Amino acid sequence: MRILCLEAPVEKEVYLKIIKEILTLYHIEIDSSFEQYDYESITFQNEIKSDAELHIASKIILKNGDKTDAVQRTLAHSLPQKPSEIHRLFKLNLFYLFEEKFGKVIAPWGILHGVRPTKIVQRYLEEGLAPSKIEEKLERDYAVSASKAALLTRIAARQMPIIKSSGHDMVSIYIGIPFCVSRCLYCSFPSNLLPQDHGIITAYLDALQQEMMAVCEMLKQYHLKVQSIYIGGGTPTSLPAADFAALLALTRKYFGSDLAEFTVEAGRPDTIDLEKIKSMQSYQVTRISVNPQTMQERTLRLIGRSHSPSDIIRVYEQIREHTTAKINMDTILGLPSETIADVRATFEQIIELSPDDITVHALAIKKGSRLKLCKKAISLPSDAEASKMGQLVETLLSRAGYQPYYLYRQGYMSGQLENIGYCREGAYSIYNIEIMSEQQTILGIGCNASTKVIFEGENGKYLQTVFNPKDLDTYFSSLPSYIEKRRALVKAAYGNK
Image (cartoon, rainbow, N blue to C red; front, side):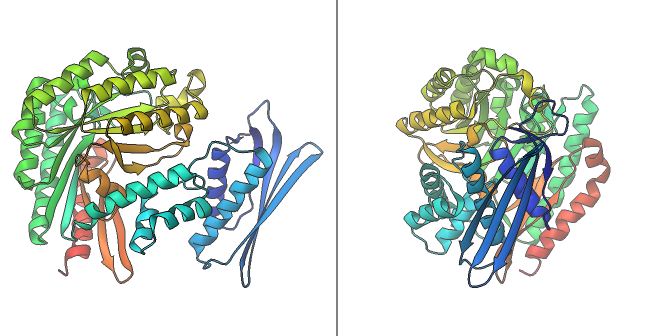
């Protein structure tokens, strides 16, 4: 649906954000440049009254010339009237109001829009709620479908023992490599094409070493133990073989050998060779991610990846032969022009390889990606088709013995789906669980890395973040100040131990 103008005289920015989320969910576009449109304007009115109960009255007015179409709905609830609850009730009321006016849409996650929905369930579990009661709350309070409520609760329950086994003195480390050999159609990461000037790579490794030294000093000063390390990007294996080996050597030098998990995002098969594989084994990498995205050759060409399905199989077999590492494989549902038959063929081939961990992403159309700019010229599966793809994959992986163990969501996801990690028994990624649960300090090193420090206050845990620059030049020029910001944040959290 197309509308020229949005009028939302609300007193807080959060309400406007909620309105835009609902508009996106119902595929309603607002743009004054439309030559053809359904309505000239849509106006929102909202009234909140509080007495023994909380009453939220929402109204939308649609105008087209002299024609006016208005619909309203009131929601009453006796919940504690915290701001977060008021915002949730406003969104829920608006969701059902739109459903009444425009009909049902594919929205299995209801009004849950955040990246980390498992955190809500983890909180309920810590409060002692039974899984069945949690599923009821998700369906009632957030309009989540029964299947997603069950999935989310099952994953959160599976994660809890892993999260609780990590003490306050245990941290993980992320190291970012902002280089790729090319940029994929859907990519929005601030990565750079691998520089032809090797001096830039050398300078980057020098900068990483400065950060590693500073982090190592803090670990010793505050008696912190590293549980897991994740080298991501970009594509870390896009580095030349000698530089890649140097990166692994630095990581081991500063963060030791006593790690529960050491992951390298090898990513693209066209950046992996036998020398790099042997380096990963030499430096005791325990988990390697090889990301085919799809096993359909025509799709690989369309999305800008210069490898073939046979390259994926060749690299997979080399890693199995020359390392003891667990292997993760990333896939994407909803890629341009793909059908359910294509998805079935892809997953049948991947399951036959038998990786330890398979991550299933739903295509997200992100700002900064080429896909966002040329979306209208590309054929994408509909939400209904993407939803069927998700159901098919869940069935195939379950039959093959894979169980879901972590989940996160992004905006504008194909089929209103989610990103979900499946693994064989005991093959879960500690880092993936910790980064999504936000209950462990993650120290970020490198361009575009973020440090998330967990504080333990009187009212429980809370999080504070420091972001390294996204731009490579800014990263180089301002490195000392960001090292100091991270040091100050860590001192504030752990200085009184």
